[in-house]
Each structure stands twice: as structure tokens, then as C-alpha cells.
Picture 1 (cartoon, helix red, strand yellow):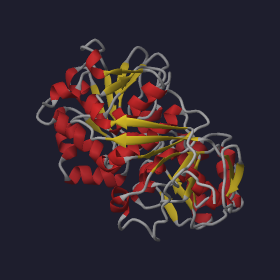
Picture 2 (cartoon, helix red, strand yellow; picture 1 turned 180 degrees about the vertical axis):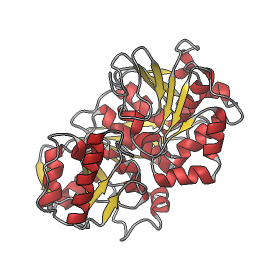
Picture 3 (spheres, rainbow, N blue to C red; picture 1 turned 90 degrees about the vertical axis):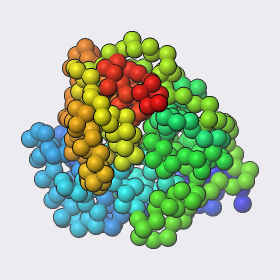
Picture 4 (spheres, rainbow, N blue to C red; picture 1 turned 45 degrees about the horizontal axis):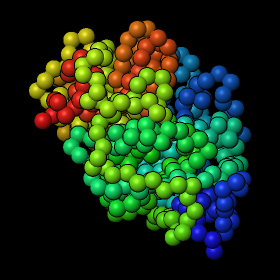
Length: 419
């Protein structure tokens, strides 16, 4: 049998084929299909389904606008609750059990190794950290997957990243992604796979950040190899044995690129675009004042991210005139942050800790930007108008960089704050 990449193996299995190749178009049976509150609440986006293909494989998560900030959102959630009740969905995460869908899927063992996950949200590639093939699908494609249990994909060529070495202090998975985006630019019509000896030095938190952010370089799928760290994270979460995939020896990659983790520094991405738009944070020299600093989103709302923020600001105060907003990725993360004293540390420093939601990341609520303001964010996206006014500027950094900048009032190097 011809050698295949990890992504090709998952698509082949889901399509009932022995082999697939770049250029093929495959019709697949998804293992999990995920719905969100946002399409249901958006006028004209939700076509009320008359059936679902399997109530155990359809998940509904309220995450973007939670609790409802508008009448339209509240009305959409009534419809979502009716949908979950009518079809007897096994996995429904309503207000109180909610969180950002990609965080919820990981925490609850619904992004399973070797499986295919469908969701309309563009950051569905987050599940790739767990060796699960996820890709943002259009609303109609997601609806078809939800009702008929089928979805089609083009098979794209894959680029492989081989990690070597270990990250230096105060450099994180976010900085790894920024390095890739800066050095290699966009990856349109290309999937990415991650492996190499340095993988064992990358935490699951860093992997989840990198996989999630691959949407920002327009990657199709983003998949990490399964290893002991994956197995440890998933222990006790899965409802069936994992069936991970590994690349075959001799798998055909468009390119293999090596990254020495030990050589990386903290980066900041400049406003309005991600590919080829980063600078080393050491080049800023306190020249960019900020009015808002945000830590949250599917990429960086994990407990590890909140711990970093608390470590940076412990015993210090947020700079006057800066709004430091921290949004946990799920209710479980929020609870753990309370139990560990993280929330108390952040609030004492002058931060606002919100409920778990997408919130400020997509400019929905919990921290909308005004014209003329600068924000440094550890969320996913920085295009004009993403977080509010199109006249606001959005810079992107790691949680450590964001927290350090909140203290300084200007974009600053976390290594200057955390000696």
C-alpha cells in the first residue's frame, strides 16, 4: 500500500478508501459534528434541521455570546435548546456548562485521535493537537454533515514541521507559531503536520495553541503526532480507545522544514495581518502604548495561559489607563483558576476576569475596542474590525508578552519583567 501522511490516513479511513492522494476529492463520514450558538443566532444563517444523522455524534456548544449580550443572541439560544431537546443530543453545553467549543471538545474527550471532526468555526484545526483532523467548514457543509453524516474535502499536499531542541524561558507555543507565520507565510491549500524529536519538549498547552493558530496561515488541516504527552492528556477523557495515526515512512510531503525551538524569541505580530507580519518583541523599545490587553480565546484561554498571566503580574499593578481582560476558555478552566488562586492574583493586580466565552476575541462583548485604541492580545486574530472598531489597532503576543505589556502600559518584552 502506498505511504500516506497522517491527514491522508484519516481522510482515507473516513472516506472508506485504502489510499488517498493530493488532488483527490473525498466524501467522508465524520466522527463528530459540532454546532455553535453564533450561526443559530445569526439571521439567515440557521436552517432548522429536520433530522440529525446521529444524536450521539452531534455536539452543540454555546460559546460565542455567553451569557446572551443581545435579544437576538438570547432568541437564538432558545432555538438551540429546542434543537438539542428535540433530537436528544447527547452532548449539549448550555450556559453554566459552557466554554469555547475547541476547549470543551478537548476537555471532554470529543476530539479523538485518528478521527474526523466537523465544525463551522474557522479554528476547528485546534483539535489537531490531539491527532484529530478538524477543519472549519462552511455553514451549509456543517449542516449537511449534521443531517446526512457526510462531508467532502479536497485532499491537499502537506508540509511537515520537525521540531528540535527545547523552548527557552518565557517563550511559548504562540511564539513558535508566530515564527512559522513570519518565516514561511501563508499555507493556503496546504495541510501541516508536526513531529520530530523536539515534540516531546512541547507541552499539550503549546501544541493546542499552535494547532489552533494554523487557521491564521490558512492551513487546511493541522495535525500533531500522537505520543506519550497526548496519551497522558487524554487519560480518563475518552469514551473509547484511541486510534491514533502516524505518518508512514516515505510519506510524500510537499516540504519538510526543521525548527530549532531553542533558537526562538518572543514575537509580536503587527496589526491587520498574520503571515509575514511579526517582529521580535525586543525590537519594540517601549514605543507602542496600549489601552487594552487581552488573554483568552480558543488559542490561549487554557489554565496554563492563566497561570503565566498570574506569574507575570503577581504582586504588581496593571498600568493606569490599561484594561487587562482575562477570559478563561471554559467553566472548568475558570473553576481551576479560582481553586489555584489565579483569579485572586489577577484581580488584585487590576485585571478583569470574565466568564468563559469567545467574548473580546471576535469583538462580540466583554471588551470591545473603540476607534484609535491599541490592544495587545493573546487571542487568535488581528484583522481590521476584529475586536470592535476598524480604527483600532490589534497587536498579537503570547500570554507572557500580553501580561508584561499590561503592567508596562506599552508593548514590552516579558523577559524584562520576569527575570
